Image (cartoon, rainbow, N blue to C red):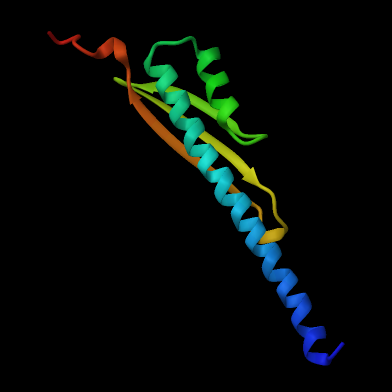
Length: 109
């Protein structure tokens, strides 16, 4: 093995590991967005809060935290999930979705 190869192989391995971590983090972020949307849709349909939390947790990454709140005519669902990684790469991913409560539609008429 040449000296150049001995230097290049560890750099390439580190680069590949960084790419894999970025793909996993991006995938978990997409799952957070999907989970927040699923929870907001369920809340807007006036489903029980346990069903709303269940719908969001099913779509969320493992270990995610789900919060549901109603503010005025909107249901808001927030999903937070830790992204595994060493040191500075350990991020907290989050997404929030809002949906108009169906029980408010046509209430002014």
